[in-house]
View (cartoon, rainbow, N blue to C red):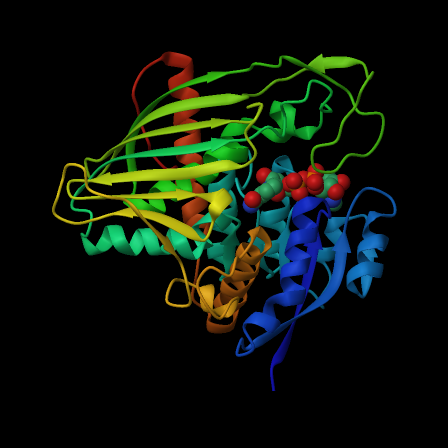
Length: 387
Ligand SMILES: NC(=O)c1ccc[n+]([C@@H]2O[C@H](COP(=O)([O-])OP(=O)(O)OC[C@H]3O[C@@H](n4cnc5c(N)ncnc54)[C@H](O)[C@@H]3O)[C@@H](O)[C@H]2O)c1
């Protein structure tokens, strides 16, 4: 008999929907999971949105006030999928109320915010999972294993890119994402946070960095009504974009490896062009999110003119076997969130973390803070996580 775990979702935009779908699907893929998530309630401030979620997914109740979720004894675990400026307040409150939290990246607006949530989670003795979904891709796990095995030699350098066009349209609405108080550091929290997590997942901690940032579309139109995701607002009154469209960054890892990380949200012609190239003294490994289940691998003893082959990941790699019976049957983005839900629920069931944790969020946010400081001063900056 599998125990039920009462779950809630706070913020039903894109990520709220994806977390909910992951709860709905997780037992299909992981039938041996010791907990069955039960959709207790959904909190959403836009009128009607929570009710629509309840109709579609079967939440037992709805509310417009997330504080009611914190006070609800039926709720044992909470997905926090509201905008970044609410992560700290909601995350701390949920942990203090004894709820396990699965919270979206970047966990607040700064490393201090991420630290506050991490501390509250640790103090309450609950589990905390973070939405760094790209590390869940079986090919990314295979890349990490390949690097750790020494097959590509000692890692010399990595290039990590996150290019997207989601903010490229000049009529893209001035939503919370473009305000410093509610969206934080723009593309740093949105995309570079994933890049830092991938860098750390593959190569270990970053010691120091230097960065440059830019805002390429300085004004956007204010939306007339509620928004979700990347809405348009043609003809609205113009307001200033307060945070970064672009960041480029040189990295020095604790291991001595070097790296380049570049992220942009206004890259016309780029749709989720996220990936990495890791180079070692004997080989290299390449990954592109758009071909998520493939890995380019160069290994051998040739050094020069060494071929690159394509590996289609399969049931032997990461969690692939929970989704498809054989290599080259494609997994997709939402599957990465099902893996995240599985790891979160497994953490709760076993009382021990699996997958990305709030400690990872603090380290990622510390690197983002360092990027912002370096872009201001032009200097190399040490990446220190707040104590
Ligand atoms: N892991 C990923 O790949 C990924 C992708 C996209 C977004 N995210 C993260 O997920 C979070 C949400 O992003 P999104 O794209 O879903 O945004 P979104 O704008 O689509 O959704 C946010 C939702 O929260 C609601 N909301 C705002 N204030 C609220 C409040 N006080 N109480 C309840 N609901 C409230 C909004 O009305 C909206 O429906 C962000 O932190 C973002 O960084 C992660």
